[in-house]
Amino acid sequence: MEIVNARLRSKVALYSLKINKGYFTAICEQDGPLDAIDGQIDASGKLACAPFVEPHIHLDAALTAGEPNWNQSGTLFEGIERWSERKPLLNEADIRQRAMKTIQLLVSQGVQYIRTHADVSDPSLVGIKTLCALRDELSDKVDIQVVAFPQEGLLSYPGGLELMEQALQFGADVVGGIPHFEYTRELGEASMKQVIELALKYDRLVDVHCDETDDPNSRFLEVLAAEALFNNMGSRVTASHTTAMGSYDNAYCSKLFRLLKKSGINFVSCPTESIHLQGRFDSYPKRRGLTRVKELNAAGLNVCFGEDSIFDPWYSLGNGKLLRTLDFGLHICQMMGYTDFSAALDLITDNSARTLNIHDSYGIQVGNPGSFILLDGEDDYSVIRQQGEVLLSVRHGQVIMRRELARVVSPDWINDDN
Figure 1 (cartoon, rainbow, N blue to C red):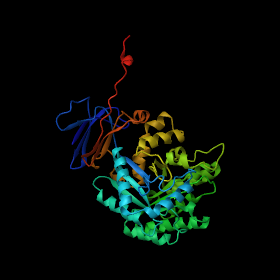
Figure 2 (cartoon, rainbow, N blue to C red; figure 1 turned 90 degrees about the vertical axis):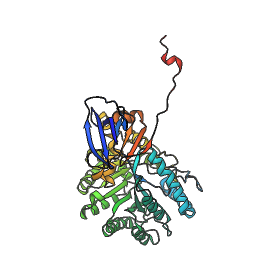
Figure 3 (cartoon, helix red, strand yellow; figure 1 turned 90 degrees about the horizontal axis):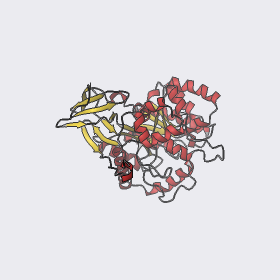
Figure 4 (cartoon, helix red, strand yellow; figure 1 turned 135 degrees about the vertical axis):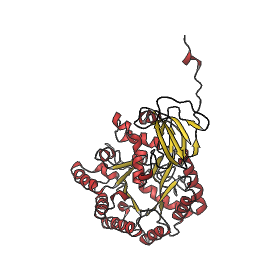
């Protein structure tokens, strides 16, 4: 496969990309536009970009909003209650059908890598078993990591620790946690230590729903970061949400950031979900309810954006478009300067790949798998401003998705010379 007349991020010239046997074999700067010959793909000056990465979603819960009841308050905790009502209705066919629809939606929007959480506060472990099976079946189409997520608490849910071990033995890729939902502070802290111990025991990654609350006294992030530091696991550990950081005072954050930098852990923020769920106990002034994305990024910590939910008890919208999530995130986090725009796609590509620990074989460079997407725009800024569509998705040298832009027919008066 050969692609001509492509633009690359942060580059001015046009480039040709060659893929052979599934890997990039040449990336060549062109002197100018080329006429595409038979067998070549003409990018027509559009932006070739590494595939989008969805670092945080719940495929087992996707497409279940309103079943059997809607989350009327819009709070995180009512969402958990509504999900508890839906869990008894789960079975393999149900989860498979909804997960497949959601995966197809994500792939149609340029996503080729997915990290999904699966609830293990369920003695049947049907979510883990079904999503691990789908991960293996779809490995030639999309890369999926499955997180064993104790939605109702690792230590507070009866048998939660044993269910977590069963999920890891079954093949879950990542150990999850939810310390702020444990019954006591002591149980929350103990759960963080337990998560790291399990990750070491089973050689797994870690991704914790951490401090997903507006409570400034919820400070389990420091426990997770310290345990990651002490066990030299920082790059393999992710703190998702950390929305309480938006309520911490600056004096505490100054101390916390020192630890976070030393630990080297990753962060996932889910801006559309957090702006919806958090701040629910505020009148005015009302908090944004997001972690300090701009400050984490400026401090050199790895932070990325995820969607979290698509039409489930916590969030009743969602369409698989990470560019929409990025647009929301840049607005909410006040990252609207030109320098922010010029590297914004990192938040849904390179940074996410680092979070998933796939960065060593990710990106458009010779020797890497020949995977990329083609975006309707010339650079990060134009793609974000115009919310450019994903025109093409290539995985290991094979086209897995192609989109033709709709043709707009303008009213006559727009082109009327009079």
